[in-house]
Each structure stands twice: as structure tokens, then as C-alpha cells.
Amino acid sequence: MATSADGPAGGVPDRGGGPLGEGERAELAALRKRFPAQKRWRAALSAVLITLAALLAPLSAVAVWVADEMADTDRYVATVAPLARHPEIRAAVTDRVTDAAMAKIDLDALLSNVKASDRPELEKALGSLRGPITDGIRDFVHQTVATFVASDAFATLWEQLNRQAHAAFTGALTGDSDTAVKVNGDAVVLDLAPVVAQVKQRLLDRGLSAASLIPSVRTEFTLVKSSDVRRVRTGFRGLQIAGNWLPVVTVVLAAAGVLLAARRRRALVAAALGIAAGVAVLGIGLAVFRVIYLDHLPAGTNQSAAGEIYDQLVRFLRVTVRTVIVLGVVVAVGTWLSGSGRRAVRVTTAWETGIGAVRHATGITTTGPVGPWVHRYRRALRWAVVAGAALALLLWPYPTGLVVIWITVVAVAALAVVEFLDETGQPDGARVTSA
Image (tube, rainbow, N blue to C red; front, side, top):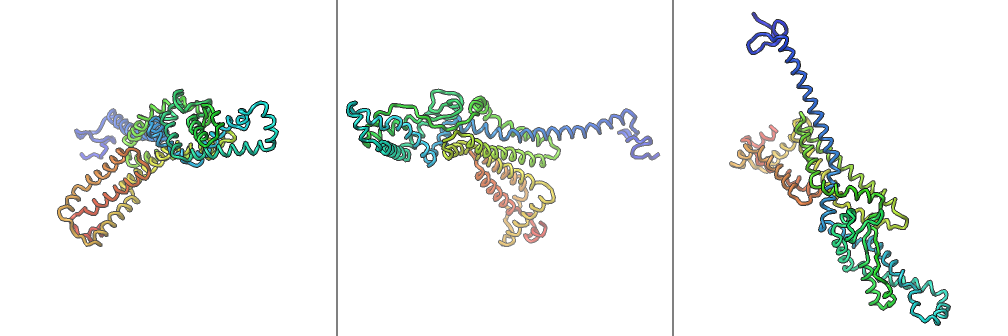
């Protein structure tokens, strides 16, 4: 007797051909409920992991900046060395050293060697000339300081000061009192005493004997001044340690989120764009904080010099932001193009058609045994190109956004060569029409 697909009682035939019992139907219903629930659970966990990766991405960039830039002497010196040649920095240092020198060699200091009995008459004779004479001395000192600051000797001394501090912010934010950079209250300052000593000798060489009155003084040049210095000091060690493993954790979270997703290609696109968006927020934050920082500097601070110092110190961080954004966009676009969506298929079809047209236009009808071999292993060759690009990016010491773009261009060119050599045995015209 024939039965329906669900059996006489609406059940499903079991392996023996009979209908399922009430218990078996209940178990089957439970299984059907469990699998959609499991999919929803995995989708939710995947979204959480990808979101965490996007949130940790900017913190990872900051941690890498602290660990690689601030804790590495050579990289720090390479970062701050160009500051010695910035006109704003030179002007600020010149003014600061001139003020320190003039505090010891003003007109009263010049008159100190005059006999007490002769001094009243000399001061009376000077009369209204006191101001112009003082201004003339200041101009002379200022010119001497400016000449020294513009010289290679100052650039070398500036680099030596920062190298002795070996990672200036590391010494400052850890409270190391043996470095040339220290935290004084809410400011990070650089001691310019060696610069004053050099200027003193140059003034003596130019005949200003009063310069001998300049003692060995500590002249401070503020690198950073903010009420947040103490708070930054508290978290600096943590970021320095986290710089080695926080980026790895971010990548692992993103990878786990992609693997848990039902639609992994879409999840990879979301992860790449999410991480790129996260570091983009960091880039915007750096620009906003620059404006806030400069607006809250004390009156009389050289705004241009402070801006140059800020820009130079966060240069590596900004490069990292641009690099991650470019890499995220490249990964997202490449993943999208590898899918079977209608628009992605149109783009890949246009790519294949264009390369086929190039073959047809150049009159290359066959590539010999190479063509069939490339066609046979084309998938492996494509993955080899992608793997090579990824390996180049990983092995590059400090990649920039431009490096990512060039690696992408080379990878696309290699994929074009693979497609050009791919020969299915059809005539080129037929390949173009088929494509």
C-alpha cells in the first residue's frame, strides 16, 4: 500500500520504511530548531568578534607606535632629528637661548666691572642710550644664536641630546631622571644647557667678554605641555608591552569572526572595512586633538613650533593609519571581486574580456605548452600571487600606504599575466566571445 512522503500519520519514513513515532518526530523537530539557533549563535558571535577587532584596531596602532617608535632609540632619533632644521623650531630655540643669555649679560652686567666711583658718572653719561645699547647687545646675541642654530653643529647637537635621552618620551613618561628629557609637572622638556654653552663660546670668540658671566645653566625647551602627561605616563608601560601582542590579538579576533560566519566572504569584507574604519577614527582623532592641544597651550607659546613637534612625533602613527586604511580597502575589494555577486561578476568578466581582447589584438593565438599548463593550475597560480603579496607585506619592515598600493599593483599585474597566459584550447576570438 502506497503512503505519502510523511506516512499515514504525517511522519517521515525511517530507514526501515515505516513511519516515525511520536518520540522520533519530537526529536526531529528539536533538531530542526537547534540548527537555526546554532546558526544565529554563530552569526552573533562572529559579529561580536569582528566588532571587537575593529575597536581594538586603533588601540593596536597606538600600542605599536609606543613600542616601536618611542621605545626604539634609532627610530626615535630618526623621527625628531629633522626638527632641528624646521624654521619654527630654530626660531623658538633661538629666542629661548637668547633670553637665557641676556639674563646674565645685560647692561648692568657690563657695568659691573667699572669702579664704583666711576659708575654714577658713566650711567649719567649713558642716559637715554641705555635702552638702545641693551637692544644692540640683544640683537648681537640673537644673531649669534641664530647663526649657530642654523648650522650643522646644532643639528648634530640636537641629535645627540635626543640620543642621550634614548627614546625621549620613554625616559620622560617613565620618570627616568638620568635622561635629557624630563617631566616637569605637566610638561615634557628638553634641557638646552649644551646649546647655551656652545653659544657662550661663540660670543666670547666674537669679542663679547661679558659672555663669560653666563654660568652653566639648565635651559628648558618644552616639547609637550598638557595636563594629560601624568595620565599618559600611567598607561605608557601598558601600551609598550601591549605593542607586541595586541595587533596579533586583533587579527586573531577578526579571523575567528570570519571563520564562524556562515557567509565568510561577506564577513571578511566587513572585517576589513571595520578595521579600516576603526583606524580612520584614530586618524580623525589625531587631527582633532592637534587643534585642541594647540588651543590649550600657555600664552606666549610658539604655536608653529608646537605644531611641528606634534606632527613629527605622530608621523609614524599617521603613516600606520593610512597603511591600514589602504590595506583594509584593498582586502575588501579583492574579497568582493572574488565572489559571485552580479556586480562582482560583471567586473571580473570585463577583466577577462579585456585581457582576451589584448591577446586577440596582439595576434597571439597560442602560448605553446605554457597555456594549457597555466589553465590547469590557474587557481593555484592565483593563490600563489596573493600569498606572495601577503608575504611581501608581512616582511616589509615598516610598510606605508604607498607600499601597499605598489604591492597591490604588482599583484594585479601578475594576475593579469596569469590570465593572459591561460589557454583553454579555444581560439582567441572564441575566448573573447565566450567571456
